[in-house]
Image 1 (spheres, helix red, strand yellow):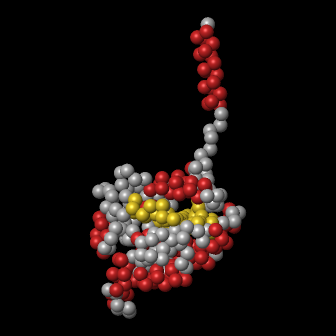
Image 2 (cartoon, one colour):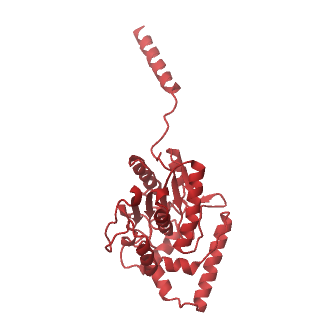
Image 3 (cartoon, rainbow, N blue to C red):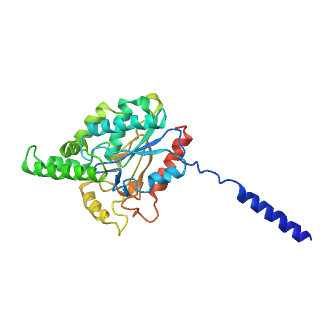
Amino acid sequence: MRNAVRTLVLTVAVLALWAQPARADTYTQTKYPIVLAHGMAGFDSLFGVLDYFYGIESSLKSGGAKVYITHVPQFNSTEARGEALLAQVQDVLARSGAAKVNLIGHSHGGLDVRYVAAVRPDLVASVTTVGSPHKGADLADYLRNHLQGGSFTEGVLAYFANSLGTVLGLLSGHTQPQDAIGALTALSKTGTSAFTAKFPAGVPTTSCGSGAATGVQGQRYYSWSGTDPFTNILDASDYALKLSSFFYSGYNDGLVGRCSSRFGTVIRDNYDMNHLDEVNQVLGLTAFFTNPVSVFRTQANRLKSAGL
């Protein structure tokens, strides 16, 4: 009889637990919406199937975050891309009813989000850059230095790059002006130096130091990047990134140097990631023991803990 009563009590307890509504996951539920900004030759989603931030948007949303993916010209100056991004940030705020946004930009997108934060600080709670060349990219310098202004070679490169940008835009459902030479100049050491002279917030004043953690109107600044150009033998893009890494004298992710990526509070600048791994590309083929999605989730939680 005693065993029967015990069994009945346990059964009732289990059923009671099952009857309770599932507790919502709020790990990434930031106060302000998260806005993701792509890099050069990027997109929001190709054919509505292949996302630039592969698996990241859905994972952040599953934890309670409001996430918006933006689209700017694939190839253009930082100012032109930044203005396109600003217009979309304003649209996000109008649609969401939020007062500010948390900006996260990858590669050239990291410079775009800095631009928006600088010209409209009242709209931006935080800026996070991922693998962004704040002090220029050696490959951009090499190409810029070996392309004579107005030359046939420069014209051919511009034509094909601009055409690629237009095609990527069309495949993602957008048409925007392209300026490949402007983009190349923007990512050179000279271009980023001029940009930082106008918008210095968060950028280290020394070659490989740390920048200010906070800025105008309490904005928070963060960054992270990788230093392993080749991480997965099955990913075809890794072979190209390994080749491009030889243009760099120090540690890099295949396109951006470790020191150049440092901005604000450096979460980490030596993840086992290459430039595309940083956004979980291509198709999640990254280093076996590194999960880029979890890095984004942790950053969202960090922003949540900071009241952002």
